[in-house]
Length: 437
Image (cartoon, rainbow, N blue to C red):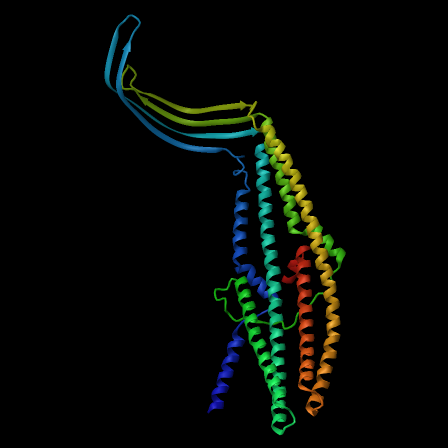
């Protein structure tokens, strides 16, 4: 009966796991790009900048107003003629009603209209670049955490293997202790080592859980404790990166450099906007309206007006006290923007060089640690044979076991560090989107 119950439970667990979606890195990225809150927010900001990049927002289109109004005035009127005669009228009620449509259009103001429109277009491009930077940061973060999850899973497997080795050693020691081949000191040491490995295994489960929670957070899953099943079980490293290609792509495609270029262009447009005040401006006003006036006294009973009206105004600001200062500041802003762009370029190339050096060193370490792992496994197998025969003390057996586990840990760390360098190199060079393919 107990066996039947266990079988049913295992089948149910298998169905539940099979029903859960298995995620590749590409699927995680695609899901995150749709759900991540930072990306959704920055895309909303981009839409705002796109909505603002219009001729109307730049003031290039006229404004048209439709209005109507009524006014009444009740009062007393006192008049006196030149010959000394005077008259007084009380409770005079004048009424006026008007309605009409009015147009106001700034035809020219020293090219400022065109400059403002170009600034809005630059702001639109900067919004697109802001979105790109946020997306690239997200891809880099999620990719790094994805492989960190794999690293933690592999490390958990290594610790599980260490526990099994320690358990087997403890079993052998207990049997040898019973027949008198091993001392109580050997037994106690084996038990201490087993407990130490078990403790590491339990602590590693916490690190694995932390990585899962972080991925759920990046994916904007409502349940941050949701269990994820990923298909990858190893850390694959791209060993084919080329320095010259990375540097050229960085100079041409890096989003931070492109953003700096847009900032320089925006500063130059600010200078043009200030200079536009050196030119005259031309404004057109036109309308069509109806006015009805009914005075409370006099011989005229009422007066009505219906028809178009228009006016054009040409002006020139001779002096405003701030123009020279603003032009000097605008030139300084342009120079600062160019210097900032150069600073970003140098900083990016420095980061690229550092990550490239670390990438190459870690590639070498991977090859070295692969050789060390082969030697450590062989050393452990020989040590276990001698230990079973009673020719090897427990301390030396533990040292052989530790050497094997350390070798597995070092190669795993080297693979993950190489992957982080690879991700950083791809992000700096503007190629981070490769992980979506």
